[in-house]
Length: 335
Image 1 (cartoon, rainbow, N blue to C red):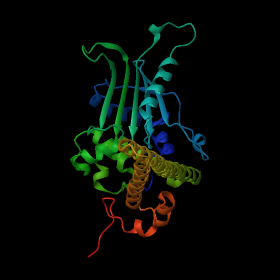
Image 2: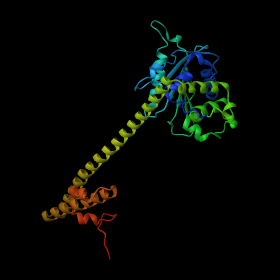
Image 3: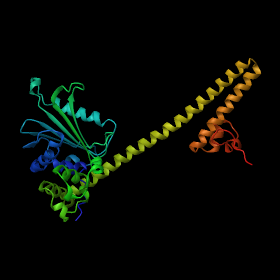
Image 4: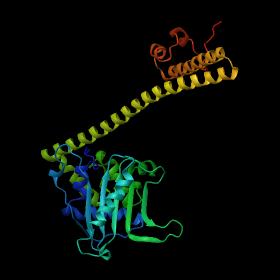
């Protein structure tokens, strides 16, 4: 039976990977990614900010990070990011810096710092290349000298992995990482009775059992639906804001184009009149410049789909003349 629960929705993701009683799930997930990113595996971790259902109740923006520490005194941050934005890279670095700084208490010296590995799971594509995993460290560009080994930021882009993966069929997965990324990308459509699913590692089976809890508990299901609705609302607001910004920019551009065009027409006309050395030529030049610019503006407005009535008001040209304009700014002639 299809589960119908998305593992990337904040409340589900935090429940799966941020529950101390399911530490082996988080450890197995990290150990599927870390070797691929050149980071040593973990043997045991402690979840420092455990999952609480109450944190996700209501319509509010929740930072879905999981903060853990392993036996080698490394801090590990896991972040699930559904929405993409231009400031995401800056936020990754800011989050890493704040957690790294928080390691030191008052009176401690800098030698007490320990490595902090930040793992960001991105549902949307963020970097303009074909790589689905990136590992960022603090290296000097020419010599490769390491400023500090404490900084590691790993990003995994699920959409890119889906596009580049050899096969979505579970029996063709080559590594635990393939299994986990498939789980995150396609978890909503998992059929627990499917033979392919039953062949996967038992940690993924345990993660699916956690997902199923959101179908059995009324409170958990309600919270899930609210979080899903919140996500859709935020995406819709972001789209509306982008659309409004485009429309406003188009209006401002048209207004500026009209003003600039009229000024240029006047200037060109005056230059022509002065060159002729005659007051009559100046007047004619100004009029001709204004008319040519008005025709050019009218042609551009027609290409943008602006109505003839509005163009006539903006340029002062007759509607009949505007209607007859061709692509070159001249009036169309008919046989």
